[in-house]
Amino acid sequence: MQINDLENLAKKYRREIFEKFLETKQGHPGSIFSMMEIAVSLYHGGFLRFDKSKKKFLDKVLISKGHATSALYPILRDFGVISKNEWNKWGKSKSQLRIFGNTSIPGIDITSGSLGHCIGSGAGMAISYKNNNQDKKVYVVISEGELYEGSTWEALLFAKHRELDNLTVIIDVNSLIILGNTSDCLKINPIKEKIEGLGIDTKEVDGHNIDELISALNNSDASQTFNCIIANTTKGKGSSVMENKKNWHYWNPMTKEEIKITREELK
Amino acid sequence: MLQRDIFINEITKKMKSDKKIYFLSADFGAAALDKLREQFPKNFIHCGISEQAMLDIAAGLALEKNKVFVYAMAPFLSLRAIEQAKCGPGLMNLPICMISVGIGLGYADAGPTHYSNEDFSCLRSIVGSSIYTPSDNNTTKFIAKEMLTKPKFSYVRLDRDVQKDLNPKINSEDYKNGFKIFGKIEKKKIAIISHGKIFHDCTSAFNKNKYLLINLFRSKPFPEKLVKKIKTIEKFLVVDEQTPSGNLSSCVYEGFRDKKFYPKIVSKSLPERYFFENGGRKFLLNKFGLSKTDLLKATKDF
Image 1: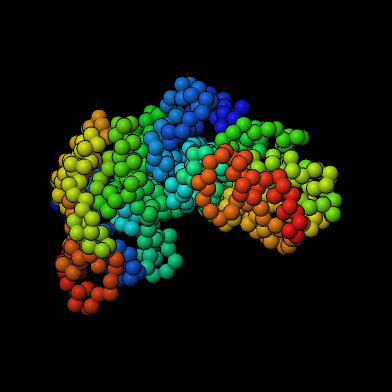
Image 2 (image 1 turned 30 degrees about the vertical axis):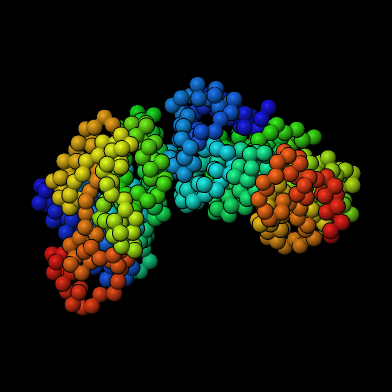
């Protein structure tokens, strides 16, 4: 696929998820919209091998920021992993799909929601693949908010010590947590220097630029060491109603005018 | 031999034929572990002093169909990583065996940070966990074998010190049941229920001819057959080296209640406080209500 196609896919998925938000009236639009290009790059950028006959991805994606796992649902639907019927039912009637992902949902590789767990779990998977000579990769997407969790740093230290080159951590840095800007709430910057301080190769990209994301993911795949990608993003990307507004971590009721504006902007 | 060495030796033996077994330690050792590490370096994972990451790493390994054992000192494995236990083996129903060493006041005189007087209630509250507290090496070996052949989310509570053998030892039928009764079942008797090291204190305090002694080495799931066996007994003294909230007596009460069995139950445990005093485990147990005399006196509380 061309970069332009991937960009259009990211827009399409935002539109579709926005319509789902209007039906479900719950969820985390800010965090989902911030990571959409990351998800599209992984799934449609050729980084995950797909077994068409089994409708199963061979490589793993763990969404550690579990409140944004539903960003994957329309992608998994397009690959036929989640059925169109399930997707259509979501928000209307009883459905397998949930705000937070769990392993009962086809294509979701881990139950997440509580922050700070998935780098460790990804490391466990990566070790298992290495020991069994399985050529498989694990991609873990975390939020910058998870850098406040001690377990995140424990796991980073561990993954570096074991040089798990089949594990890539992508940090979605949208600069907002529930109560406000990270720099005001509890300063976490400079993130790159902190992670590099552990000896981890770290690449910083514009998390909405698919070209940059794909280049960083290619570098990561070629690397012989454990590495991280910092993806700088905008929370609520694509909607002027939501962008960079802390209250749009969660879904909020929208006026007809706001709905109209958002639909227009997401075209 | 220490319970931990017994358990780890069983794992080491099985590792020879099963490459899907992983042993993770949060910088906690054992003589047997030195051998395991040497023989199976790929299947031993030092996680650093990072109990939380250890449980997450274990979850990742278990999601790939491995049999995983995590190992650390009881107070840190149980409380530091309790949310990881919920989100990993709990929520995802993963076969992770948590081996916890030094329950109760096992680490006297290290002080209250190293005592594990609430781990039982904490891990018991996690949905899907199975809880084991062996009193001797024979029972410990049975548990290890079960976890290797039928792995499941389990929390195994081992003592720091060498434990005496139970006499008679539990057999495979007892193990299947989850408990062993010592003494003849007679209606007039008071039954003493306990587990772990403190069960031995009960056996020396209470004469088998006068009291019924029940070793409840598997407290969760609560043994199905226990109530049927002892339903003629009217008085139960439950002894545990834990603080009062949610200790073995709560477990016994709930297990009995589920079978609509409502005998008198007296709980004898450590008091609701932290223990800063020096003097060793025996001194602390004597000072804080778990001496042999205290246990005997408690039978007058019905």
